[in-house]
Each structure stands twice: as structure tokens, then as C-alpha cells.
Image 1 (cartoon, rainbow, N blue to C red):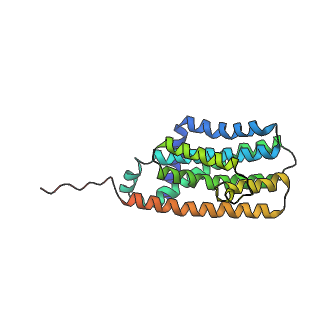
Image 2: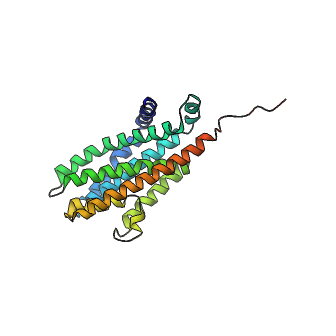
Image 3: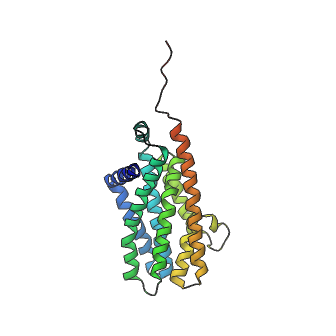
Length: 230
């Protein structure tokens, strides 16, 4: 447990040093909210949730890419693969929750007639899904530029798809649309239960995938080189 906390703290410190990342974490959701604010409260809430998802996913991508050079040394120090990916994920979840708090308060003070508990649950689901998604893309695409473009594509497709279509249900942040519908439009509880179940399943699948990728990559021990026989 101590090693998980250590890796989580290292992740948070690395992100704090990257002031551009912190600025992105705050500006992106706020921009999404402001663009849709004058049109419809439901659209502004859904855009805000996607902004939080994008910001946390991008932070996870940057943290994963930045830790590549450090991971071999941590492995030599006795850290196991699960210490590294679970610790980093804990740090990213903590950061995502901290970022979500001011935006939750924004919806409370700036929007009326909402189920605010549903807004809070939707933000929790966004953070839960976004952290492993960013780490997964960071593990598959080591270069930040390619990973950022892929994240942008995911968010763009998520915004453009009809939420009632079958394809939309395959997107990672479909849960936020369902829960937002329950919170904003006061639909039946089925929207809430479907959204929470979708977020739980997607998070679990990505956790398993991240664990597999990190386990394979870190056990290869590329930092070790066999000395040639003389």
C-alpha cells in the first residue's frame, strides 16, 4: 500500500510541475461549459462532462508518457508492475476528483432544476473512465502527439453520435450522457442505472487491459542488457 501511495504522489508531483497540463485541466471543461451555456442547460452539462473526461484523459496520457523513463529504475528498486499502474491510476483519480469539485459547484450555482446528485455521479463516472483510458492510450502510443489526437477523435465522435444508437453505447463516455439525461431531463431511473453500469463495465475492462499491457511491457526488462561473453 505504501508503494501505491508513493507512485500516486509521484504522479501528482509530475503533473503539478507541468503547468500547461493544469491549465488545460481547468480551461477545457470551462470552455465546453461556456460554449453551450446560452443554448440549453442540458447541452452545457453534457459538454462540461465531456470536457472533464477529455482533461483527465489527457493528464493520464501525459503522466504515462512521462513515467516511461522512470519505470525501469522503479522496477530495479523492487516495485512490481501493479504498484506502478495502480499507483498512477490512484493519483489520476485523486486529481480528477479535485478538478471536478469546482465544476460541480459551478453547476449548482449557475444552473437550476437539476438533480445535483446525478451530476456528481456523472462526474465520478467520467473520472473513473478517463484515467484508465488515458493510461491505455499512453501505453499503446508512446508519443504524446499521437495520443492526444486519438483522444480528440474519441471525444469528437462521442459528441457527434446519436446517444440512442448502438454505436454510441460502445463509446467510453456514453455513461455520462445517460446520467446527464436523468439529472437534467428528470427521466426515469433506468437512465441512471444504465449509465452507472456502463461506466463500471468500461472501467473494469480498461483496468484489465492496462494491467495486461503494463505487465507485459515491464516484465520484458528492456533496461537490462546481457554482457557479451569474452
